[in-house]
Length: 139
Image (cartoon, rainbow, N blue to C red):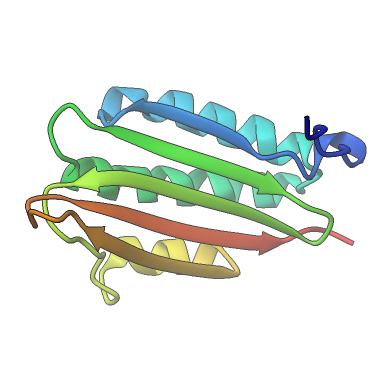
């Protein structure tokens, strides 16, 4: 039986995943977990605020495009050098934020790296849409 990964100090290195219904009413839960995981991983207060805002913005965009009765999943992974977040939802069609939209530009300003991708379903009616972002950890 494989053993669990050895945790780094402060709990960094162990991914945390949250799945909630793709509803705007769930945004406070997502913001709260983003804050807790980022703080526990050693992010600065400024980074925590930036991450909360970026994740809120990404989740809002994905919820607006989400298929009915679907979920939004946030995966957080804090390492020694980089804190990564991946947000995924099933959207009603292949979706990607407009690169020149204010929403997307805000996210780009708050993170060191950000990317969006989608994988259409075989029937083409929905897609698994994912946004990944990361920030460098403080020295």
